[in-house]
Amino acid sequence: GENVEQHPSTLSVQEGDSAVIKCTYSDSASNYFPWYKQELGKRPQLIIDIRSNVGEKKDQRIAVTLNKTAKHFSLHITETQPEDSAVYFCAASETGNQFYFGTGTSLTVIP
Amino acid sequence: DSGVTQTPKHLITATGQRVTLRCSPRSGDLSVYWYQQSLDQGLQFLIQYYNGEERAKGNILERFSAQQFPDLHSELNLSSLELGDSALYFCASSTSGAPYEQYFGPGTRLTVT
Image (cartoon, rainbow over all chains, first blue to last red; front, side, top):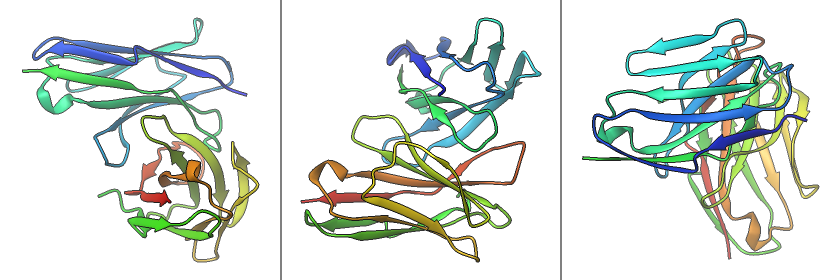
């Protein structure tokens, strides 16, 4: 089955700096890659996603890039703010029937 | 609010007992997924139902079972509970086929004592 690895497990940045979280996947058939943000004690929330026919997608301060050849995708957050502090999860899916999640990255934005 | 509801919010029970967690998907969503999240852990996929039928199975224990009813709500049954089953259980729903976006419910926190 699919195996998704996520790095780093923890990340601290100064407010205003950029944060980058990387994920690799093993199954070349995976074609949908969402990112979720989870605040403490709350539900994971979809923040951005990308499909395999696209190399990059942006939504305001958040962007995701996908390298199908290398089988990795990354989340980029620019101009970080304290409210960006949370755990971020990447995931991969082929058909939408099963999602394989990374182990999460705990992001702390220091004011 | 994602539109996915889960009940109960919290559940405290003893080892050996059986509990049922309930999930109602967003209006129009045919797929329901169940996940387990233990303390400081990631999301472990348990099982997926699509329009009443099991579609995919993950690392779900034999003591656990699920079903999706004709009105599309789903229940996750956990039996012979052990201390290690204490976790946050999330349900998520999505539409059929692409684009696959999942929307999570608020979760049920299960504590086994």
